[in-house]
Amino acid sequence: MGELIAFLSGKGGTGKTSVCAGVATALAGDGEKVLCIDCDIGLRNLDIALGMSELAALSFEDVYRGDYTLDMAAAHPQYPTLRFLTAPMQLSSEELDGEAFGELLREARLFYDYVFLDAPAGIERGFHLAACHADRVVLVTGSDPASVRDAGRAAELLEQMGKRNVRLVVNRIDPKMFKKMRLTVDDIMDEAGLPLLGLVPEDRNVVLAAAFKKPLLKKTKKGAAAACGRIAKRLQGFRRRVQL
View (cartoon, helix red, strand yellow):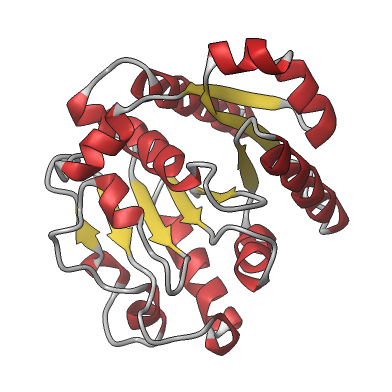
């Protein structure tokens, strides 16, 4: 049975979606079967980060309503084991059928090694819906004070929900800015109260890859792409230990 991983952030602008896409493509590049689900109703962007913006994609609502089957999820043109479901366009988070969505996720775990949920930023219903079904949570933060504070608040909420498998990714790291701010990664971990899963550097290739409609790992193997690859390896390590 596959592992369900929610990618969350306490606020917008942390680069959560690009991290989710980078890790997903790294896993698919290793032959893992991955399903990415964009849960950000109204502000969906995961298709851009995956390099799938020009492909027609079913929404997860299309599937849980029974209009289409899970095996009809959009296939990535460059990663044969990666599939994608987008967020519905004309549906509010309050109208989302949580029970049907949960059933869809249970089915997906039977067919995929990893199911990634790219949740909307913030701590509203989409945050809770993704987190409540997740086996593991990846909380993505930037290094700016607002992002770190909001990551700490999100971590508190996850603890209240009984989530224990929560790891922190610090994204868009700029060593020069860290030095000027007299900031360390340990400082961020202490304020968030979470163990670290990975560090991702600031990298203009993230924006350039999206502009050219490519997944990041098809544009470069360095910088943020390499960091996402390392995070993918760590997730694979966690999964293998659990299976033992």
